[in-house]
Amino acid sequence: MPDNVTSLFRSTAAHSPSMAALTRESDGAGPVDFCIPCNPYFPTPAMFEEMAARLRDIITYYPSSADTITAELCSLLQLPPQCVAMGNGSTELITWIDHLLVRESLAVPVPTFGRWTDQPMETGKRVDMFPLQESSGFALDLAQYAEFIRARGTRVAVICNPNNPDGGFLHKHAVVQFMDAMADLDLVVIDESFLEFADAENEPSVVQEAMLRPNVIVLRSLGKNFGLHGIRFGYLVANPALAGRVRSMLPKWNLNSFAEHVVFMLKEHGAEYAQSLHQVRRDRMDMSGQLSSLPGLTVYPSQGNFLFVRLPVGAEGTVVRDRLLTEHRILVRECGNKIGSSSRFLRLVVRPQVDVRRLVTGLEQVLYGTSRRGAAVPEQATGTAYSSGTAAVDRLVTQTNGAGTRGLAQAAGAGMPLPAAASAPAVGPGGGMPVPAAAGLPQPEPRPVPQEAPRPQPVPQPVPQPVPAPQPAPQPVSVPQPQQLPQPAAYPEPAPQPAPAAPPLAPAAAFAAPAPAPAPMQVPPATGPTPPGVPARGGLTAAQVRGTDGLSMAPATGWPGAQSWPDAAGMGQAAG
Image (cartoon, rainbow, N blue to C red; front, side):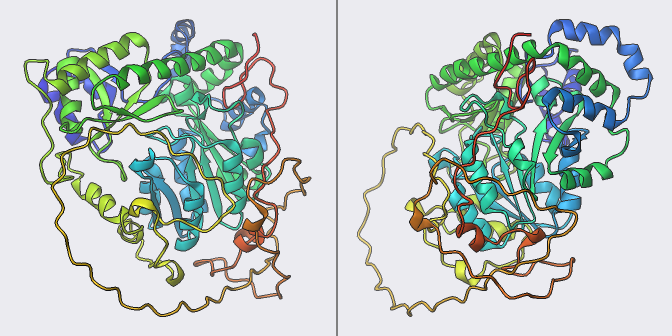
């Protein structure tokens, strides 16, 4: 592939040029794609032949309405159509969620899918970014994330499970607990776009729980799972009021004829689809083992159909990316433009073993100098000065991780200072994110991170330590009592659920006594920020949640009536 192909990376607004653009600039054959996270085993060759035979009709005629296509998908997944909205890709649904349901602020762990940070900022919202720590393998600590949301006063919370680009996974009971702890927020979004590739849990999806809650949306992808990114289709699941609000704003024909044809084909190919997911999971284990054998390369545990890797010291991501493309016709995702990541990281899509062997050979030649051009260009000696053009983002994350998130949140377009009570948080080991008090949320085990060989350190010289000045005794903080608002008609209160049989995960000491019934108050206007301590959408405040058993484990619920099709997380299957 000619060297000038890499100039396409500098001329595109996306992280990588499209496969069509790369093909046009080469000799007519595109590279092996380790960049776009697509299922390589589905649709099957026979399904592609069937679509090719129908191509003329598919592209000639209008599709059916979105309601018709949604009804067919819901019949397949055993979901009520009134709880589902289908979009022209998950990006369209994220855009409408931002326009309709994000009023003032949104919190999201970083690094993650870029539209969750970029879309709200484009419409003037404050985005509070919670940096995931490399030292813990980019694992998301839900207790610390919840404390961060409370300190910032954020009104919308997002979790991607598994997370993109690192593949970090959260178990279902922990996600349900987080949803209940955030019941007073305007909205909680659980992005499950890659969940069907997970195998850490039999039923990891929270779609059933989302339909019962007034402020939760679960976002799911179809293009990634079905290997059809070009068709652009995905869906969300929520209670009827939330799903109907998004669905009412979508164009009547927002789904194309290819999407309709594929959805109506799926009921005949459930067994092949389940087998494709199983094969991707096996390939992920094999690919992780092969990459881990490369000296100095760190491979992080993943439950997605991709692996997040850290290049060895002395390698720079854009150089590795460009040389893999020009010398070996391999396209990889360099993650220097992801907030919270840097150009030392690559995201590599899981592919069949024959392609992985080609990738490993290419990396060996580029990284370790076994090709005519020698080893990859080393990093500069000035820390995070990467040549990818994202040094400013890297420095921003590096500088703020050690001192909390004040600078990072404000640099994200916030302009809103941290509350006084949160201005001096307790700092965790290593000077990372603040460690919260008992929040009733489970603490995840750190994801294993292979350690690099230690570098020689200079002999430290004794430095005189200043005597700290005496600090004044802390003054008690007046906490406003939660206020009860009338329940809006658009968000009907769910029916009371029976108490779960399982014991609560958190000790009893972690829960405060229930707050006394508050006096009536005036309802604040619908526009403008929500006052502190006032529940949103008539939900519970944080104090009320902690005073109940709302954080105990939820009973396991499956997908009813699925006989010939895998459940929504792709776990179960029956012979078909």
